[in-house]
Amino acid sequence: MYLFFIRAFNDVDHFTPIIWKMNRDNYPVVVYCINPEYDIQNDYRLNFLRDNGVRVDYIYNELAKDLGIFHRIMRFLYQTTYDLQKRIVVDSRFSSRLQGLAHIAAKFLYHLTRKKYYGLDWARNILERNRAQVLCFDWVTPKRYVVDVLLRAAEEMAVMKLALPHGVYLYTNDLYANNLLKIDSTKNRLSEKREQFNRYDYIVVQNRLYQDVMSASGVERQKIIVLGSARYCDEWMMQHKKILPRVMKSADEDTGSLKVVFMTTRSRYRIKVERMIRTFDMLSKMKGVDIRVKPHTRTNQYNANKDVGMFTGLPFPNAAAVSSVELCEWADVILVVGSSIIIEALKLHKPVLYLKFLHENITEYEKFGACWIIHNETELQEALMSLKKTKTKVPYRNEDVNKWLSEIIYGGRDKRDVLADYEALILDCAKRGKPS
Image (cartoon, one colour):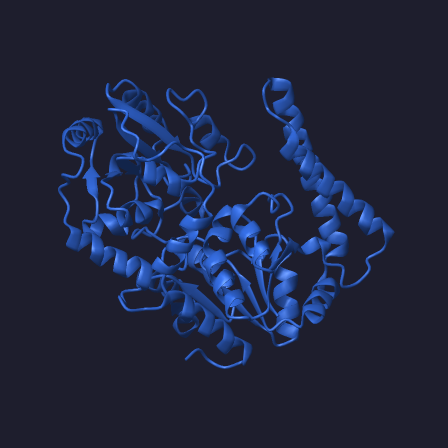
């Protein structure tokens, strides 16, 4: 059995194409969620996999070994409390506090249960029962959830462990996130990355940019495999459009306004939060422009309070409940800061405005000239007014866009069959051999 471990929206997004490919080719796969807070019942991609015969469940429901009545009680309590947290509708300060208390209680109960029951013996039994051939994680730190014990069990049983992408690495500067700035020294930062990834037998990246970054941190280069992006390869994007739940009106409907979607990212990626809020206000006052804003998919009130604050009292609709893909189809123009959704927009041949003035990083797409680089609020207003008149007139070249898409999706190889290459690597690992 080939085991895939998920924990959040982004992991599911990048893993589903690979799982779909392997299941379609009749290889036995199972999906385990290691995050008890993630709602696996209402994820359209996981439901698609279930409809195609893939087993999807929380790993904590896998009772390869009976852990006793007290474990069952504790598991019931934290699962029920997490479920309660999801069900509470926040429409007042009281319900918001109640939801927060439910989250704290669920997290406490989960950590207590994990410490007492989810140890090495439990992990080993799960791998034995599934006859595990390869374990596929995302780029997760081993200390999260039950990753460490699963890796240790795999090491004891000589089962190969892969770290697969959960996003697209876009930044060319080293200190791209606030938490990296807080690490004492470059030596400590590199040591942390090295320790994280050297627990895996192979680390898959989509492009050579991240291969170089990871290698520079001390990860053995021969362990870093460039395979392209499963999420954004043509084969999966065609399939994804067939299963995507749609909630918006037809993208062809002409309202007379310039339809704009603002794809944000998390504040930890060196975002200038106050300036972004002022930009929201400026955009809301522009006439003839219909704005939607999409918070990053990992934004929630428990791990990103500053992010939640950015989207409180927005002067235009918050499209958090709408798929980013559908928003890109609806929009005439896409605004981005540091999000991989730019790939979707560019593949749809939609004008993309990169708001460089809202963060302190350097992106690969700006280096390739694959977008309209905006340096301040005035340039943003002028660009939108220009696009309102001529929706296809942009100052960047298709050649530069295609060159960047080739690098970011196919690892610099135009003819690569991305999903077949992922499958081949996993199968090679199951044979204990080096990738071909």
